[in-house]
Amino acid sequence: MRKRIIPIIFAILAASFYAVNIPLSKLLMNDIAPTMMAGLLYLGAGIGIGIMFLFKVKKTPKEELLNKNDLPYVLGMIALDIAAPILLMFGIRGTTSGNASLLNNFEIVATSLIALIIFKEAISKKLWIAIVLVTVSSALLTFDISSLEFTWQSLLILGAAICWGFENNCTRKISSRSSYEIVTIKGLCCGIGSIVIGLIIGEQFPLSVYLLYALLLGFVAYGLSIFFYIKAQAKLGAAKTSAFYAVNPFMGVILSLIIFKEIPTWNFYIALAIMLAGAVLIIIDTLERRHTHVHTHVIIHTHDGTTHTHVIEHSHPHNHF
Image 1 (spheres, rainbow, N blue to C red):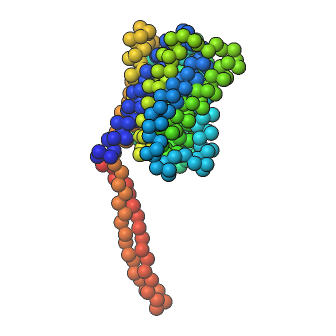
Image 2: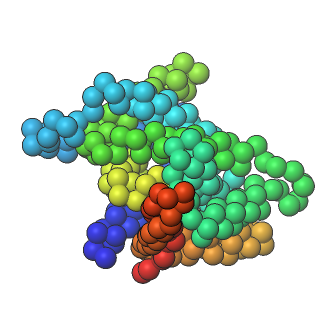
Image 3: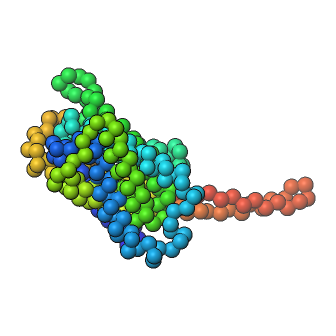
């Protein structure tokens, strides 16, 4: 039980730290441009976890450090992590923080489907039902009831979620490596990359106290969140770890109500209830322990004067808590 609980705690910690990202980023973007904001968040993560890595690197076994075989996944991780937060920052400027927090949960669907189709991870019936519920909830939030059309800001957030879905699976392939090293590389490379893009498109680098606020938010919401995410992912897999992110939008919604005094529309409450049902299924599915019982039958028969022996095996899974 303890071996299953600890990765779950790590996954919930990752979700909790990330929950502050959207409402506080939206607040800081009153003074910081979106692409620059995305870069500073990752830069804060890279600097903070990088300092921690300096004290750990000498004690880290060589086999836990990244090597040339990991390069394709590292490059994929970096490219996707540059694109995703930029899409998210532009998306949250045009929608409520609560809506954005829930919409970002589409990452669960993207991660699970990519894990199934490309990386051949198993997905249970409960997790499939949860994926459908999250998808329906996301569709409700993306649809603008008043104008009967999909909002482009919501579509940007869904685009970010899909990018992170691919990125989660890239990170899953290297999750047995040092979490400190992965987050440091991810944070510094993605942060610098986004800042360069921001400068190219004409955004201003913030030279004020808001710069420090953004870096600190990045250390908590991205650095510590990704660190615990990788720890959980090594034991739970990409699909289930991402599924635990189902708890983070509920925290984000609460923060949004406190900070922005946002009054959600009626479709938000329906989406929230559907998303909550999906989250409950995800947690139940993750806590279940699956055993496969194998039954063996030996059949002996004589044919044309020769004795033949056939061994037939069949198995069936059982779920236990």
